[in-house]
Amino acid sequence: MNCCKCFSLFILIVLAIDSFSASIKVLLFRIRSTTFKATIIKTLIEEIFRFSFLLPLAILTASVLSGKIRLNIPLAIIAIYFIVFFFLNFYYPQLIKLMTKKVYYFIYTLFEYITFTSLLYYIIRNNKFKKLILICSILFIGFMIINYLVTSYKRMDSVPIGVSTILLFIYIFYYLFNSLKEIESKSLYKGPELWFVTAMLIYLGSTFFFFILANSLDSQFMSDYWHFSFLGDIVKNILFAIGLVLYVKASGRVKKDKSTVDHLLGM
Image 1 (cartoon, helix red, strand yellow):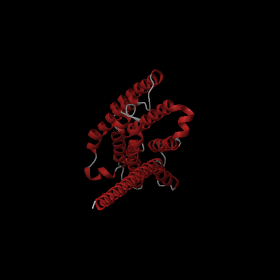
Image 2 (cartoon, rainbow, N blue to C red):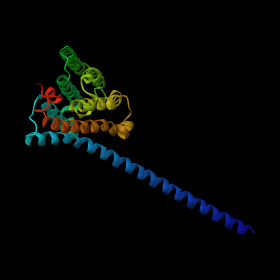
Image 3 (tube, helix red, strand yellow):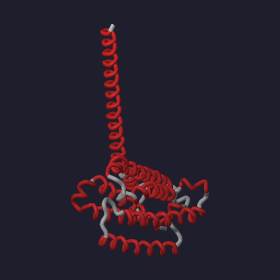
Image 4 (cartoon, rainbow, N blue to C red):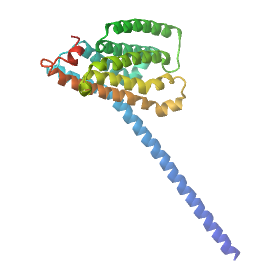
Protein backbone atom coordinates (compact mmCIF):
# COMPACT_ATOMS: atom_id res chain seq x y z
CA MET A 1 0.00 0.00 0.00
CA ASN A 2 2.81 2.35 0.98
CA CYS A 3 4.62 1.44 -2.22
CA CYS A 4 1.56 2.42 -4.26
CA LYS A 5 1.33 5.74 -2.43
CA CYS A 6 5.01 6.44 -2.98
CA PHE A 7 4.74 5.50 -6.63
CA SER A 8 1.69 7.75 -7.08
CA LEU A 9 3.48 10.60 -5.33
CA PHE A 10 6.52 10.07 -7.54
CA ILE A 11 4.33 10.16 -10.66
CA LEU A 12 2.68 13.41 -9.48
CA ILE A 13 6.05 15.00 -8.79
CA VAL A 14 7.35 13.97 -12.22
CA LEU A 15 4.20 15.35 -13.91
CA ALA A 16 4.47 18.58 -11.93
CA ILE A 17 8.14 18.99 -12.88
CA ASP A 18 7.34 18.23 -16.51
CA SER A 19 4.47 20.73 -16.54
CA PHE A 20 6.63 23.36 -14.89
CA SER A 21 9.41 22.72 -17.38
CA ALA A 22 6.98 23.00 -20.28
CA SER A 23 5.64 26.26 -18.88
CA ILE A 24 9.14 27.65 -18.55
CA LYS A 25 9.90 26.68 -22.17
CA VAL A 26 6.72 28.39 -23.40
CA LEU A 27 7.51 31.49 -21.35
CA LEU A 28 11.05 31.65 -22.68
CA PHE A 29 9.78 31.16 -26.22
CA ARG A 30 7.31 34.02 -25.79
CA ILE A 31 10.01 36.24 -24.34
CA ARG A 32 12.32 35.43 -27.23
CA SER A 33 9.48 35.96 -29.71
CA THR A 34 8.52 39.29 -28.12
CA THR A 35 12.12 40.46 -28.17
CA PHE A 36 12.51 39.34 -31.75
CA LYS A 37 9.32 41.12 -32.78
CA ALA A 38 10.38 44.28 -30.94
CA THR A 39 13.76 44.18 -32.69
CA ILE A 40 12.09 43.74 -36.09
CA ILE A 41 9.72 46.65 -35.42
CA LYS A 42 12.58 48.85 -34.23
CA THR A 43 14.73 48.03 -37.27
CA LEU A 44 11.81 48.55 -39.64
CA ILE A 45 10.96 51.96 -38.20
CA GLU A 46 14.60 53.06 -38.31
CA GLU A 47 15.05 52.03 -41.95
CA ILE A 48 11.78 53.64 -43.06
CA PHE A 49 12.81 56.76 -41.15
CA ARG A 50 16.16 57.04 -42.93
CA PHE A 51 14.91 56.38 -46.45
CA SER A 52 11.70 58.43 -46.09
CA PHE A 53 13.86 61.54 -46.58
CA LEU A 54 14.41 60.41 -50.17
CA LEU A 55 10.69 60.37 -51.06
CA PRO A 56 10.19 64.17 -51.33
CA LEU A 57 13.59 64.44 -53.04
CA ALA A 58 12.60 61.86 -55.65
CA ILE A 59 9.35 63.70 -56.45
CA LEU A 60 11.08 67.08 -56.59
CA THR A 61 13.98 65.85 -58.73
CA ALA A 62 11.70 64.03 -61.19
CA SER A 63 9.42 67.06 -61.52
CA VAL A 64 12.29 69.49 -62.13
CA LEU A 65 14.09 67.22 -64.62
CA SER A 66 10.86 66.55 -66.54
CA GLY A 67 10.21 70.28 -66.85
CA LYS A 68 6.93 70.22 -64.91
CA ILE A 69 8.21 72.81 -62.41
CA ARG A 70 11.09 75.24 -62.13
CA LEU A 71 13.32 75.30 -59.09
CA ASN A 72 12.71 78.42 -56.99
CA ILE A 73 13.87 79.53 -53.55
CA PRO A 74 11.21 77.69 -51.46
CA LEU A 75 11.72 74.48 -53.44
CA ALA A 76 15.49 74.86 -53.10
CA ILE A 77 15.04 75.19 -49.32
CA ILE A 78 12.98 71.97 -49.29
CA ALA A 79 15.54 70.15 -51.44
CA ILE A 80 18.48 71.28 -49.28
CA TYR A 81 16.63 70.28 -46.12
CA PHE A 82 15.96 66.71 -47.28
CA ILE A 83 19.44 66.22 -48.77
CA VAL A 84 21.21 67.42 -45.62
CA PHE A 85 19.01 65.54 -43.17
CA PHE A 86 19.14 62.34 -45.17
CA PHE A 87 22.93 62.35 -44.82
CA LEU A 88 22.83 63.51 -41.17
CA ASN A 89 20.59 60.58 -40.25
CA PHE A 90 21.93 57.93 -42.63
CA TYR A 91 25.56 58.51 -41.61
CA TYR A 92 24.81 59.28 -37.94
CA PRO A 93 27.36 56.78 -36.44
CA GLN A 94 30.18 58.02 -38.68
CA LEU A 95 29.37 61.70 -38.14
CA ILE A 96 29.20 61.30 -34.35
CA LYS A 97 32.75 59.86 -34.37
CA LEU A 98 33.93 62.57 -36.75
CA MET A 99 32.47 65.67 -35.04
CA THR A 100 31.22 64.56 -31.56
CA LYS A 101 27.59 64.59 -30.41
CA LYS A 102 27.70 68.20 -29.26
CA VAL A 103 28.73 69.53 -32.68
CA TYR A 104 26.37 67.14 -34.48
CA TYR A 105 23.27 68.20 -32.55
CA PHE A 106 24.25 71.88 -32.73
CA ILE A 107 24.33 71.63 -36.53
CA TYR A 108 21.16 69.50 -36.59
CA THR A 109 19.07 71.87 -34.47
CA LEU A 110 20.37 75.06 -36.06
CA PHE A 111 19.95 73.86 -39.64
CA GLU A 112 16.47 72.48 -38.95
CA TYR A 113 15.36 75.79 -37.45
CA ILE A 114 16.83 77.81 -40.33
CA THR A 115 15.25 75.68 -43.07
CA PHE A 116 11.81 75.47 -41.44
CA THR A 117 11.83 79.19 -40.63
CA SER A 118 12.97 80.12 -44.14
CA LEU A 119 10.13 78.12 -45.68
CA LEU A 120 7.59 79.66 -43.31
CA TYR A 121 9.03 83.10 -44.11
CA TYR A 122 8.14 82.60 -47.77
CA ILE A 123 4.70 81.19 -46.99
CA ILE A 124 3.62 83.90 -44.50
CA ARG A 125 2.46 87.08 -46.25
CA ASN A 126 2.42 89.67 -43.48
CA ASN A 127 5.56 91.81 -43.75
CA LYS A 128 5.41 92.98 -40.11
CA PHE A 129 5.34 89.40 -38.88
CA LYS A 130 8.21 88.56 -41.23
CA LYS A 131 10.30 91.24 -39.49
CA LEU A 132 9.42 89.63 -36.16
CA ILE A 133 10.59 86.27 -37.53
CA LEU A 134 13.93 87.81 -38.54
CA ILE A 135 14.44 89.41 -35.10
CA CYS A 136 13.52 86.19 -33.25
CA SER A 137 15.79 84.17 -35.52
CA ILE A 138 18.80 86.44 -34.92
CA LEU A 139 18.23 86.26 -31.16
CA PHE A 140 17.78 82.48 -31.28
CA ILE A 141 20.97 81.90 -33.27
CA GLY A 142 22.86 84.07 -30.78
CA PHE A 143 21.34 82.06 -27.93
CA MET A 144 22.36 78.78 -29.61
CA ILE A 145 25.97 79.91 -30.00
CA ILE A 146 26.18 81.01 -26.35
CA ASN A 147 24.50 77.80 -25.16
CA TYR A 148 26.94 75.73 -27.22
CA LEU A 149 29.95 77.51 -25.71
CA VAL A 150 28.94 77.48 -22.04
CA THR A 151 26.88 74.32 -21.50
CA SER A 152 27.27 70.57 -21.83
CA TYR A 153 24.62 67.87 -22.13
CA LYS A 154 24.27 64.13 -21.75
CA ARG A 155 22.64 63.22 -25.06
CA MET A 156 20.99 66.13 -26.86
CA ASP A 157 20.72 69.93 -26.80
CA SER A 158 17.24 69.78 -25.23
CA VAL A 159 17.00 73.49 -24.29
CA PRO A 160 17.77 74.87 -27.79
CA ILE A 161 15.42 72.27 -29.27
CA GLY A 162 12.67 73.38 -26.89
CA VAL A 163 13.18 77.08 -27.70
CA SER A 164 13.31 76.49 -31.47
CA THR A 165 10.17 74.33 -31.33
CA ILE A 166 8.24 77.02 -29.42
CA LEU A 167 9.32 79.69 -31.92
CA LEU A 168 8.29 77.50 -34.86
CA PHE A 169 4.95 76.79 -33.17
CA ILE A 170 4.36 80.55 -32.98
CA TYR A 171 5.13 81.01 -36.69
CA ILE A 172 2.96 78.04 -37.67
CA PHE A 173 -0.03 79.03 -35.53
CA TYR A 174 0.17 82.58 -36.87
CA TYR A 175 -0.06 81.21 -40.38
CA LEU A 176 -2.93 78.87 -39.51
CA PHE A 177 -5.02 81.50 -37.71
CA ASN A 178 -4.39 84.40 -40.09
CA SER A 179 -3.30 83.37 -43.57
CA LEU A 180 -5.76 80.48 -43.94
CA LYS A 181 -8.73 82.85 -43.49
CA GLU A 182 -8.05 84.13 -47.00
CA ILE A 183 -8.26 80.67 -48.59
CA GLU A 184 -11.56 79.00 -49.49
CA SER A 185 -12.31 75.95 -47.36
CA LYS A 186 -13.05 73.80 -50.44
CA SER A 187 -9.60 74.41 -51.92
CA LEU A 188 -7.76 74.45 -48.59
CA TYR A 189 -6.48 70.88 -48.72
CA LYS A 190 -5.50 71.26 -52.39
CA GLY A 191 -2.85 73.88 -51.68
CA PRO A 192 0.73 72.68 -51.05
CA GLU A 193 1.34 75.26 -48.31
CA LEU A 194 -1.07 73.65 -45.85
CA TRP A 195 0.56 70.24 -46.31
CA PHE A 196 4.03 71.67 -45.67
CA VAL A 197 2.91 73.55 -42.56
CA THR A 198 0.93 70.55 -41.26
CA ALA A 199 3.98 68.33 -41.80
CA MET A 200 6.13 70.62 -39.67
CA LEU A 201 3.42 70.93 -37.00
CA ILE A 202 2.94 67.16 -36.64
CA TYR A 203 6.68 66.52 -36.57
CA LEU A 204 7.41 69.20 -33.97
CA GLY A 205 4.45 68.20 -31.81
CA SER A 206 5.17 64.47 -31.87
CA THR A 207 8.89 64.79 -31.08
CA PHE A 208 8.81 67.74 -28.65
CA PHE A 209 8.62 65.79 -25.38
CA PHE A 210 10.98 63.07 -26.62
CA PHE A 211 13.68 65.69 -27.24
CA ILE A 212 12.96 67.77 -24.14
CA LEU A 213 13.26 64.72 -21.85
CA ALA A 214 16.11 63.03 -23.74
CA ASN A 215 18.79 63.93 -21.21
CA SER A 216 16.76 62.76 -18.20
CA LEU A 217 15.60 59.38 -19.53
CA ASP A 218 17.51 56.21 -18.62
CA SER A 219 19.49 54.30 -21.21
CA GLN A 220 17.14 51.28 -21.23
CA PHE A 221 14.12 53.44 -21.99
CA MET A 222 16.02 55.20 -24.78
CA SER A 223 17.00 51.86 -26.27
CA ASP A 224 13.48 50.42 -26.07
CA TYR A 225 11.36 53.39 -27.14
CA TRP A 226 13.44 56.11 -28.80
CA HIS A 227 12.75 54.75 -32.29
CA PHE A 228 9.09 55.74 -31.87
CA SER A 229 10.18 59.38 -32.09
CA PHE A 230 11.07 58.65 -35.73
CA LEU A 231 7.37 58.23 -36.57
CA GLY A 232 6.94 62.02 -36.52
CA ASP A 233 9.72 62.34 -39.09
CA ILE A 234 8.18 59.66 -41.30
CA VAL A 235 4.76 61.37 -41.27
CA LYS A 236 6.41 64.75 -41.94
CA ASN A 237 8.30 63.41 -44.96
CA ILE A 238 5.17 61.76 -46.40
CA LEU A 239 3.16 64.98 -46.00
CA PHE A 240 5.93 66.98 -47.67
CA ALA A 241 5.82 64.51 -50.56
CA ILE A 242 2.04 64.95 -50.87
CA GLY A 243 2.49 68.73 -50.79
CA LEU A 244 5.05 68.54 -53.59
CA VAL A 245 2.71 66.41 -55.72
CA LEU A 246 -0.03 69.02 -55.24
CA TYR A 247 2.47 71.76 -56.05
CA VAL A 248 3.36 70.06 -59.34
CA LYS A 249 -0.34 69.71 -60.24
CA ALA A 250 -1.04 73.34 -59.36
CA SER A 251 1.97 74.48 -61.39
CA GLY A 252 0.35 72.96 -64.47
CA ARG A 253 -2.55 75.38 -64.02
CA VAL A 254 -0.49 78.42 -63.03
CA LYS A 255 -0.98 80.23 -66.35
CA LYS A 256 -4.76 79.86 -66.12
CA ASP A 257 -5.28 80.41 -62.41
CA LYS A 258 -2.90 82.54 -60.33
CA SER A 259 -3.26 81.09 -56.83
CA THR A 260 -1.15 79.81 -53.95
CA VAL A 261 1.48 78.53 -56.36
CA ASP A 262 2.37 82.09 -57.34
CA HIS A 263 2.87 82.99 -53.71
CA LEU A 264 5.05 79.95 -53.07
CA LEU A 265 7.13 80.89 -56.10
CA GLY A 266 7.80 84.22 -54.42
CA MET A 267 5.83 86.29 -56.97
